[in-house]
Image 1: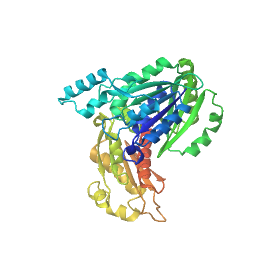
Image 2: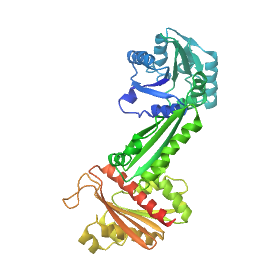
Image 3: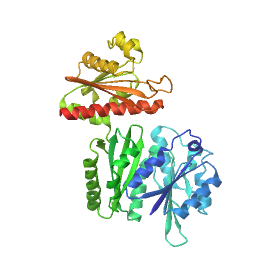
Image 4: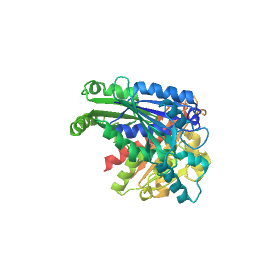
Length: 419
């Protein structure tokens, strides 16, 4: 059973607004056992919307539409749906009472434009919208070969659409269709590229049972391996997928740092709490990116004490106390300097662990001896300090992200040995 999502709005096509509605809708549908076959974006033009609806009808049993049902003149979806379903707009008393109640709560009178929000296509079933004025619309249309295609139109405003999907649309779709159980388990890896990882697990991947699928989801600094299974029996599906995850754990334990929605900074935080230890950072090339990742975690103040963004050499010297002679002899991007940065941060912040980074993020600033992407990461811990060199490439944004993740993973591994 296929579902197609149609998102309507010029703003989506000119890049003014990111289409977060589609990704959220697809995720919720997948969790409920519905397979999203296609996502289509159309502009606010009657002909384009009609064309998208007709094409979706040929491909999908369920078509979910968001956008274009507001009160202004550029919102054409209701009128276009009337044309597609050969019907007309009629005034809906129940919808109008909801509009009145909403405006009363906000202390405003109902305007003529919002009065029109109570007009719905005659042959649709209205879907309540407690957060806005635009009701959802549920249509059913006979398919040429038998059966029906369900069309559901929703507001494009994300919080209105999400409430409507969660409270009304998905529960009703599950009453109409019997869906399989779908189970995803995502294995998170760091420190190895997609192609190298694929080579390491090739034999395992080739022997996956027919009911389990693998997807590689790479991003700068990490690769997610998503295993998916589906079937009628939830217990069997979970057991089958989890068994394959266990095999991966024995194949590539050195690359796996977590699962599903976990993050490196969250995992490191748990480790530090368990050990009752603390952390500080001294960042040069990452410019505070590691600190930002960490401070996004609620409660991190229990284990994270602070950071020095020592971008300029004088800050390395005057704040962290790195000797000018060391910088002059080895350069700011060097094993010697980054190790001194880590030791200084650990001492000055009086913490158990410290991370330090120094590198050439790019796109310029490199040399034949130290090309763009050259990066040093140091970890200082009780009784030890060590540093690792990496060459990450010539993209500044990716270099910062990869350095931040690599640094956190080095720390995770170091703490794991001590636990």
